[in-house]
Length: 130
Image (tube, helix red, strand yellow):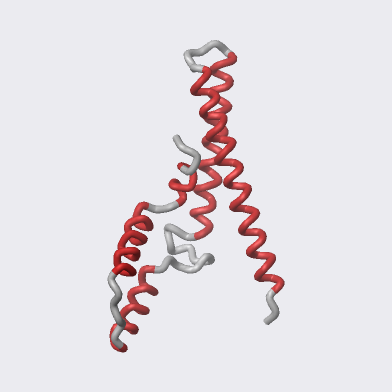
């Protein structure tokens, strides 16, 4: 497992396909006709996820963050189990215990940084004058 695999867990597979399609579309210049603009905006609004407060969307912001926290918690629990298994003499290798501890550490650090960025964004929005 490499250092950015926790980030890959957060990005849905459709996003990478969409970004590759977007890059290909950027490579070939194309002018938008006036009638196509309405079609693009209606298609984009139907592809966008529901609002954060909506309970109908299965991929809401709250669910994504909750899943992310649950994954970090699971990695920490797995690291704790690996260390306990190592200390109790079970069939757990030292390498596997250290790797699981590092995975949990990196995941936790990333979660803290995401929290910091979210908090910073919230504070910036609160400083905006209406």
